[in-house]
Image 1 (cartoon, rainbow over the protein chains, first blue to last red):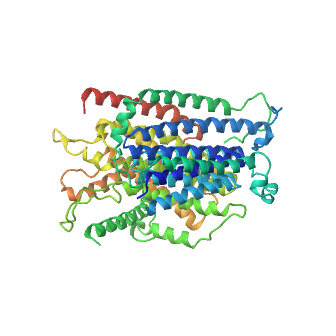
Image 2: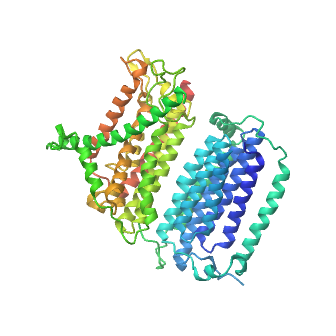
Image 3: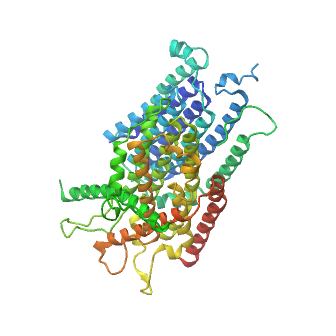
Length: 100
Length: 178
Length: 341
């Protein structure tokens, strides 16, 4: 039977994969996908803790996290579309005009 | 226990492939596979409602949105020549930092999280898995965040439509009309 | 191999083959009804009254050449019909089609006539319907052809738009039935008022039933909402580049989705397997009759109504059907609160 530790280790690994994705990838959409991986890892640990304490709070918070993730994905993608219209590129290194 | 390892392996491998793929469409599809595995893990954690909601909301709606944007923008592959010749830890700037940070994060999280959970047996308390209980808690204790979330979704919807609207004055390149 | 396991395997095999036969029967019914509605002779050559027509169709499709465009993404091109067909079959796994039966005393305790008994069956059907969108989107994209891409994107945008009204009409039924399990929802419709009118939810929710069926027709991309695969408009939409068995898979998926939507509507609104005159163990006959009636309605609509243009279709889904579904849900909630059902 999997214990709480197993789920937390899995959540940590997924979170680290998401973080690596945000830094390593040079494509705006893949960066947004890595953020979704991170949010899912956090969802998993919420549900695991909720199960371990026997309350419903873990699942309720996951409900809110999913909603916020959906809103953030929608707005993020709209911004990506706007940026693409300007420079025809999805590489974040092309949007450096504010850099000092 | 084998189900846990199966779902965990699928989730980790799919997530690794998401960040390793060149083609953004394959990245999105692999992420959907990862969400499917996570949904299986939620079922193992006695949370069937969260499992089904994960499929409906994440895999069924958010990823369709990602797929639409990738298809409409005809998202180009990244530049591959430089990336394939240089090893991950020797690339400049954020890439090197990201790799080192991820490794450090894994080590630190594993250390911190395994110190917290001291029980080494299976879950000892009863699970809350009925949708009726979830609904009751959602609408009584968490009623205020629930209402705020609905305003948040409205704001996000309006914002997404306004941000993605084509500005008729600028004559720049735009996504092809559908 | 306990008797229960054997019974479950038998139910699984029976349901799978019944779905396949149902799709084949729908091919014939569609041709025959189209001919009757258009006052011409339908399939009469193959077998008596053309009853072997579906088999002739399948054999023809099997012998066709399996084409693959050179510029197509071969993995996604091959995966798309598999996703469509798999989601179509899987959605029926949680639909109950008969009362709990012990198979004339062969089993120790009664077993539900359902492949998988899940507590959240209604949501599972919704989830699998959401996954079915991917088959179409990937078919459109991987064919690397403009008709396919436009058809695929339009079709998937239509499907996810009408899923909202579908879900809200479903939510109104959940308020009446107080459970997410389809078996419980059907059992809440047993009995009758004044011994004449059965306690089906369609009498409590007529608007909800119409919204559900309209959204279901739009979900399955059938006329009058089949613009994305219309022959006159877009060649054949997302399945333009497909031939032989891949095309047969899309075809099959469409018919089985129709059967699933009709079956779910029967369970939610028309009382499932409850009906007069037959004992409870033969309730599946009533179920088949009701599903057949809804499928007749589907085919009748296709050959009678003209097709909606795409912007009219989307305007209808968002500006008319969705507000109606919300009003329906609010009215149902008010009714439940006031009458205490």
